[in-house]
Structures are given as structure tokens and as C-alpha cells.
Image (cartoon, rainbow, N blue to C red; front, side, top):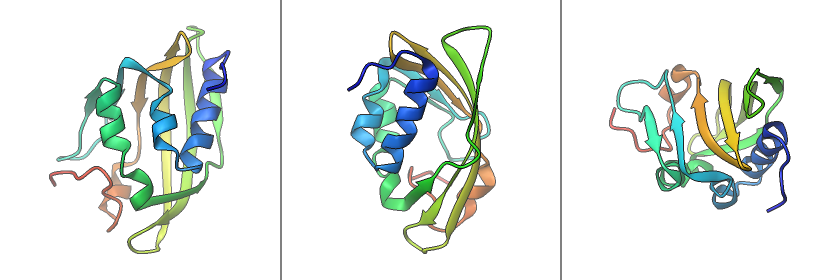
Length: 141
């Protein structure tokens, strides 16, 4: 893996890996004790994943359900903490099961320490998962 000198560079690399559907490499960007949180997750969806293994398990089937094509409107904002960024973006593509368009708006707060993601709070639109074929995480809803 290339050395990433900043959270912004690491995050941009992570998006390329998602577009390439390389989930193992994407998960490889995480610290062993990294935490992923979903404050707006609907009932039955996970709200907190603790550890790299839990994040990998959650994301494992993502490309089988969502075929991402691009992340337009990407804006990355630096914060007072040089290791934390705030990201605004859209993920667009198609739902594999139905062929319907996928268009999700995201705001994420991401912290990187020693070149690894340690915290990722993902404020995604919970209405998008109501679409048939969008449930890549096997929710209990």
C-alpha cells in the first residue's frame, strides 16, 4: 500500500478502492481498533462497528449489491485537528439486484492516525436503503 501523508490523501485513495470494488484493500486502510459509526442508521441496521474485522464483515458484500460508478461533488474539509477531515459527497451507481440507479448523499467525519482510519462517522441517507436491493449488510429490518 502506498504511504498516505494526509487524511485527505488516504480518503481519496479509499474512494478509488471502493470504485475498484477492492474491499479487502479498502479494509486494509483501517486500524485494528478502528470504529465505524452510523448515527442515522434506520432500525435493524448497525449503528456502531468496533474493530477492523467488524468493518470488513460489514463491507464484504457491498459490491455484490451496489455497483458504484463515481463520487461526484466530493468536498473534503480540514478541521482544527490535522488528523480529522469532514467529507461531503455523493455515491452514484446502480443497484445490482434491480439495475435501478443508486444515488446516496454522505457526510463523513474521518480521523486518521499513523496512516490508518481510526474513526469514521458516516451520516448517510437512511431513506436510500429502503430501495429493493440496497441491503448489503443483511439488516434485521
